[in-house]
Amino acid sequence: MDLFGFDYQINILPYDGEVYYFGQFIDDDDAASILLSELIQNIRWRHDELFIYGRHIITNRKTAWYGDSALKYSYSNTTKTALPWVPALSSLKNLVEKQTQTSFNSCLLNLYHSGVEGMAWHSDDEKELGEEPTIASISLGAERKFSFKHKRTKENISLLLERGSLLFMKGVTQKHWQHSLPKTTRVTEPRVNLTFRTIFEQF
Image (cartoon, rainbow, N blue to C red; front, top):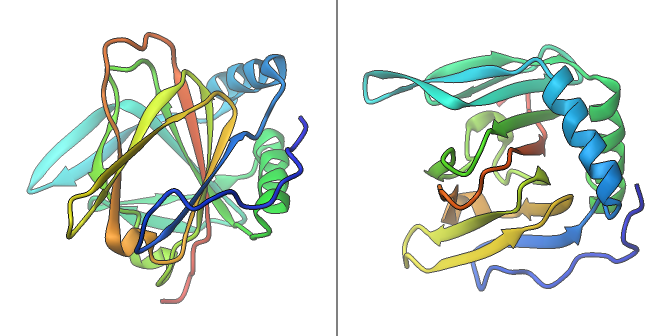
């Protein structure tokens, strides 16, 4: 796995946040395919369970939560306890930290079996992530559209997340912008998304 030798690219947000797209972070298609298969087979995936407006929802997509210790992360009225790192995740964490010059202590993974599974508009603004959450997101498998929407102006910005790409969100992005992974029937391949984060145990 080779990293591109460049620093941050142009901020893709026009205001109120910082999002940098590094393109193909893993630029070897064979290595990316092998890694995708390894993660699908060996990660301890579970259907996500959410409690929204009093409703108990079990998603089709699957998730997993790993970290430096038994870190807890709560969203949509559920709490996850981190599993210990596996070698593939530890290696990716080290590469991401080197590229972004940022330390992370946890990773939330999502497995989308096809384009009919997506993610609704939301912000990663849970209190465990601190005042200005920093999130590095790797995409493996199917290429998918990813969108941002400003909370006040409703301005919408979208990009295509390539196979093996890296997206880096920081600053006040989560305060002012929502993001989503729109559903599409045109994508039939699976996608694994790894979002490296920092959990603050005292907040």
